Image (cartoon, rainbow over all chains, first blue to last red; front, side, top):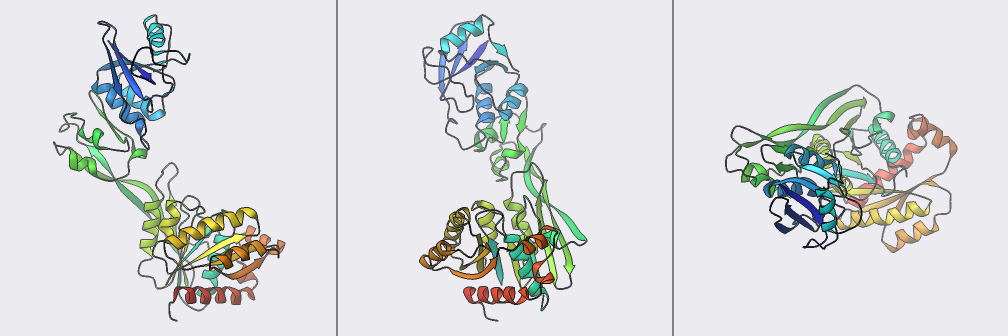
Length: 111
Length: 283
């Protein structure tokens, strides 16, 4: 399954980003193959409505789960409808740390 | 002739000035008062009467799910994030939609059509023989004040003498209320906040190229700074209403100063003449 982790940078060593719609990067990790893809968030500086647009981006990249700090109301509705499981990570660590905790089922599922 | 009453700061007395101006003018002719403070209209409290009410709508997309093939074009096009195309459905976020209609144009399957969505109402009443009141009211939860203001002003389009009472502030609703007016009354008060926001409101009127004059309300008699600002910016102080507990009491119970104290009708009649002079509109 593909999990998307919001990130401040392009690698697994980058700090995880707490915001969803305005995260600078989305890191997609295929938990079966281990492949990693970093996608720049084109909506990071958008005026508004960035949450639902980011949710559509996650859908088009085939994400089945996502890890972030905070998810806004509209983004949450879109992610729920899309069937993308939401997990909260707020430890201030790296994307790799968030991924590790996701793999170990140590994150709180919020939707 | 179209007059607007604005202020910048809230609670300075826009509605008081608008109501008294309209009441005074209605004694001698026909006047239309438009409440453009659609998030919190209050002129009807001073001018109660049976109203005819109609809905104001705006176009929003409706998606034919049989025709939609989830290509995602509409969601990519919408800069406001109002449409989210997901794996097996399209989500529409009404509060993010700006009614631009772009989604209907980019859909390759012609699966999107526009349908009306109610966002508020326009109430029209005749509370006094010479006075028509048009009240725009934005529905709770709807974020778009401008279309309601536009509809309220449109309702008064054919009326010869119109006074529009603006919302406070200097944002889009105020611009929509002021635009196209022949003159604008800026209401301020004897406080630093009143003066600060008068400066902002005067700037809006100037940028819209609308001649403006100032009314100082609840004056404590010490308005030197306001006069200095007005002198420096070529604004005339058209009327000063002193601070008076009795005036506040009249206002608080929904009374009209110039009805209860007819001697004030002359002051508001003069205010109107001053506005007409500012606007350069002949009698």
